[in-house]
Image (cartoon, rainbow, N blue to C red):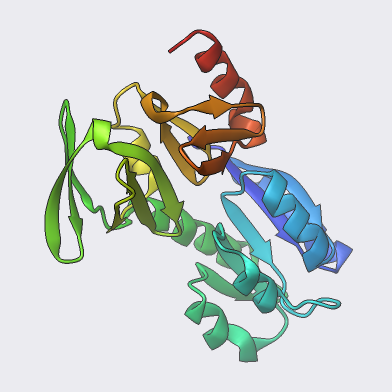
Length: 234
């Protein structure tokens, strides 16, 4: 079973404890961090690879919805709030579910099922992966893209941006997890949102990978594997 990494942002300590207690009753979830406000939550999002965010709305200084709007690449989100009136706005931001406090354990588990289903049933834009090329749907067309053309792959919510060596890009509806499982060995995951083609990497350190003029972040959870593979000369 997958071990989903969770962040909880809520200014009420008892609300955070309830969420952690509920998650302890379900296999496959790990609470990496918790935060009492959006500013602290932003720090946790930046330094951790979060699969699922539990988010309150009414918080000091920055509301949960404004916090969510500020994220360029938000994780999957379940809102837990005492305020019903923000539900429509929340779903417009593509949250997985909107739970009203106090939350019953059965309703909480249903939200987790929706989260897991959203990962499994994302529409796949990668139609074929052969020995030397991708065949994808993008902008109502089908493209055949040789692997050696691809410099890196970027995840943006439920879409992938495939970057080419001539600075061309292709956008397709798919998940980074789906394509990662099928790519050949020269492709390496360095972050929740990035896979790089090692043949195009020009420099790297523990924090960044350089491809031409692009500097891509190496996240903490992938760092040791990235360094080990490049030190071996793979």
